[in-house]
Image (cartoon, rainbow over all chains, first blue to last red; front, top):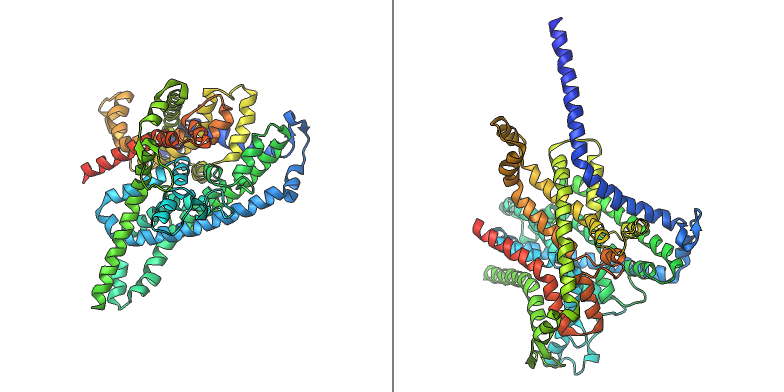
Length: 309
Length: 266
């Protein structure tokens, strides 16, 4: 009998304990929940509601899909969507390739020199706005590169320099993102390379693998998961970021976030629901990519919590 | 023979990679510095012909409005940092030390605003703030800056708490330490490095916000990035360069501190 009583007492104690722990955890999380749930998720929800026709200040208060339907036939939106996908893809592919190459070349130095790791993070921390402003002075038709080209006789006037800012192909935007995101991919790949060491390659070497075979069949498969998941993050970021295309892009067609901002800030309030609909679409695509990233990071890298910078 | 050529080729490729890294970090700064002191730098001169302190004098003069914007930026960023850490610290502790239902969903919600800027939630928040009179106010701007900073600080501090053993606190309590003393002498020292990094990044994220400040501040609350864009649009390169350097100063300061800290560790 006594045993049973003790057992019951134990169970009751544990339940009590876990209830108090649960209360404690809830209390600890509450302030963050207010910010994330209230401001971030709440804002997202309000945006969705507004884009679906509840927008009293523009005289709308009934559910409608009109704003999304309008976007389908909106020439500016379609051109902008194509441009955004294209630029995000190109910037991601170049950054991923260059970042991986940089990581492979720097792996030995990075293992010895931690200062190099810090230097790699400098471009990461530089605000996009500052990067774009600096870049104008470098790649503009009368910028530093054009002057260097002139001094070696490649061009004779600024007009001969290829347009890289506010240009058709969004070259300036791509260059800015590549400069910012290459170090990011390199850092993610370096983290894996340094952690794994070179034992796998040494084993392959002992077994007679050539340098190319070691790279192709040993090193690349090891870093691929980190590079792929980092690339998803880069794509999502480029897709939804405003500052770089705002400074370096041309007005038409502009990238989606720029179009959304312009319509949102228009004096014509009736453009606002359209702007919000565009922003909601961006958010949907970005959310999907981040969700994929989390799954990939868990499946491929085998970590519960994906690393961020 | 072939082998030596390959190794020397390999070595030079590695040196180039290192040089690119250093160049990426340093060249933009050197350029900005030159530009900010350039008086005449017409095509096709590679270096400025004459130097002057005009741009710096101008941005230091009150009518330029830069000092007001700078003060506003610092004030907003400090408020945001304090609030973000106050919110993030308990949340990070819960995330690192406890298992609970919905943890993965919460991590996802934290990761979203960190990885991608959310135009949509800023627009939604604008409608909400409009109703409660928070638009065009400093408080509104501080609140909207919490959207990217709280998740970032939380994730960073979760990392610090992951290596933290709450039994240390229990031992201190058993020895009779008050909760304040436990926090001051046990918890704080254990998470101090992570806390410093989280604070620095919260400050930097708030500092570099452009669009959210524009939406919620409505052009009334002017921070440094807004001034920078205004001058960039006006086309004065020297002033834009000087302002960019001011804008970059906190970022660089953080890196100098981190680099020195690393050297001391080695």
